[in-house]
Length: 628
Image (cartoon, one colour):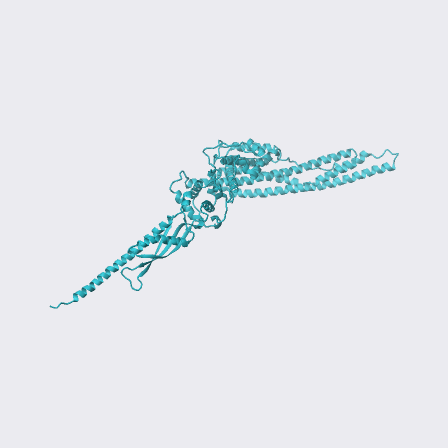
């Protein structure tokens, strides 16, 4: 019996279709699996790459940096980590063709944004406790702004006090000249009484010479008065603009204590009108003097001719002749100003002014503990990250973020009181100041702390009626009861400002000795009396202050300076410090090489398992991203 083969052929075709479908499904599944495997391998390779963070940076600063000099190095490193995964890919057979770094974010990019994020990530784990919240940070910033505003305003008004005192001295020079004129006028009159013509003319000439001093003295007085008025108006404008930065209590007290400046300037305007009339009076008086001198010569000629021609006569009536000269002389009205100089105890005033002089010329000598040697460290700015900083790149962070940043810096950087021995020791001070020597950074940082303390101390004085009364009592001693009455108030405000400065000097000295100084002063935490202030001004020696256990230490005040400073600049300077210290062990370390985040695109070639043809390979792309 003959059999047909149709079923076998049909069945073979069916099986071929089934196998093709199955192989297609398997290839599709394998291809999809290849893509997932490639993505897993890419992410794992990126994790492995970023696990190679800089160990020394982590040990010293608890920050994650991946050091790769350029994108090509980063790409090659990633490809190296991909190789083991591709070699073990099994039936996902593939090989990496190339890698391209799409985005690489380094620590120096975008105003140090990524350094900030690295620090905040570290700080958020609660390693630091008792940090203030947003409200507390806002209150602190408000207090610091108020202290700075008060310091600036008090500096301006204290300068007006010095200008007013110089104005009083210029007035005193004019008064002294008028007094001397009176004495010379009397001396000339005495010579007339003795019939001494040459002596009279000599004294008259001296009087004219003294009168010639009046115009330049009056001009100098007017110039000082104009400068005082102009600068006072500028300070008044600054006071008006600063109203919002002052609390209502401080604002009212400050306005009360500075109102005397306007009164002084207004009353000086009345005095000035009489002073400016003096040069014209001097011109008129000189004309009378010349007539008197000419008449004295005529009298001498009359007497001489009489002696030569009439030897037997009793002679001329000298009383009558010299009396005619005296009659002219008596017509000279030597002016008398109806005012007295307002500084009766200039010595105390000079002593108070010397306090500011000591601070400006020798602050470090006043506040440094005895026997302290200032570090001579020098920073080499070559290749420092801060040299590449561009303005306006950084995002402005919140106040709490600033607090976290300053706490981080206080924990990982050294300062004046740190015991760690380093070539460049004052790292916190460098963040604040940015000079290239430890000495300059320390001096400027200490000066900035002094300004904060001066402002806060003046706020306390303005709120303490007893201290204000003490200042006014001393001002009355300095000015006396004569002169322009508002001058006592002007000097009183100057005393308050100098008093706040003197107390600030003691505060800073305590801080540099490792003690604490109260941020907001009370009567109990105040150290300097007015007697001690005068001693400070006369001897230049700073009294000792009492430690306040509840106060703030030197590092705390440095943190305040960081808090109110430019956070972008501080971040770059922090990178300077990190680079400088790491370079001591690794000379080629640069923060510009440190990667915080990267995105890489890889291209892989995979082989078809069931389909070949002319091109058995196909390409796959993968993107992977990683950040610390």
